[in-house]
Image 1 (cartoon, rainbow, N blue to C red):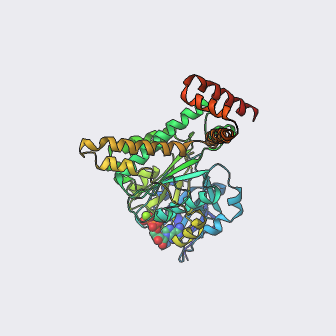
Image 2: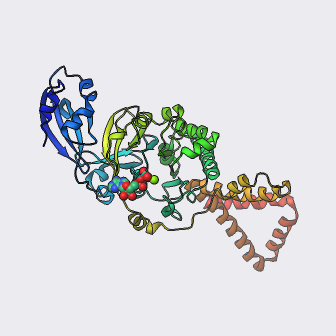
Image 3: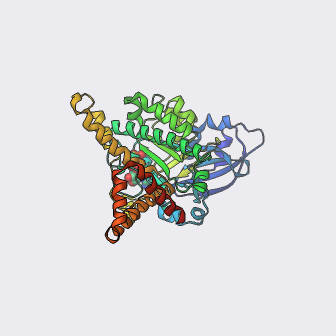
Length: 443
Ligand SMILES: Nc1ncnc2c1ncn2[C@@H]1O[C@H](COP(=O)(O)OP(=O)(O)O)[C@@H](O)[C@H]1O
Ligand SMILES: [Mg+2]
């Protein structure tokens, strides 16, 4: 075993070890330096200190309880944190906010929750195999455990095709999992349109955001769009970045939130405009210090140990180390069992339009018809509960009207004649309408 105090003294750093905590992946030793110690003296000699300690993956953190510096060393044996246990914890029940997600556990093993609604979007990066997909699943499942399918819908974009297939045909899906770049771009556009529609509805109902609207008018569901690997999308379609930017800037009040993940956090993917609009970021182990700097504006993520080990940069600028909780595909399937249903492909017509854009013009009118049907369906889906109720009530009254009309036809030839008159003479139609309105009023 090494003597940290002695090793540090070799580099002119003096102080006292105050304690340590052992988490599932790392041990943190808290070192209280003498007053006047410069952090720079430690960070500049970090590789030599690690060598003398005989450890790999040494990370120092200057935000530690009691004004200490934390020396974080990987454990010999890694424990897996089960998402199931984390979601059953006291902290999970106490987690506040509209969309609490579990980020994992802190160094001391206590579950860490954060409200996606406040983040209000999350950028995730990390090298292949660092735990991004497991992390995204943990976020999705924490939300599913907390919200009913009518309160929350997901849009999932998965160009790799395998990560999210388990979520297909679930009540929580706004549309089937998207695996195609053109569809992904169309889906983002659909979200932008939906956001604008929601703002119009807020305007009409004199509300400002989804919380106020839901209190006043009824149910508007949250939408969380999760993209597992957005680098290709941004690089192949120039409009994607603009759409992401629009959503990131304005969609929060409309209850639309984004979680974007990439294994390629280079500056052409995680651009300045994306970074400016995503203050909350999560870095799993990155391939290099440069990648860590791109995503977190600080190095350190390259020294993480992998397997869900991550650094979370909160919107307030605070950086903390977190170990992601694990859930297997079988575990996800088990949780999703009660929510199985057919999900209509909202985007199908759109992708067909995109892929056959160069098709002969003669096919255009037919497609227009498809578009209208699809439009009507999506309008129905986006109507609020109260609006749907009002619409159904109207249909119901019309049916009652027709039924009463048909009954009285047999009994009284006079009424029958008057109905026949109403049908043939447009003038009398007003009268029938008035009678109908009276019936409604009385009810
Ligand atoms: N939080 C975690 N706890 C335990 N093992 C994990 C965790 N996250 C990832 N792993 C392990 O690492 C493997 C790769 O994780 P994955 O999420 O697929 O990485 P990525 O999406 O970044 O390529 C997983 O199959 C799992 O074995
Ligand atoms: Mg992955």
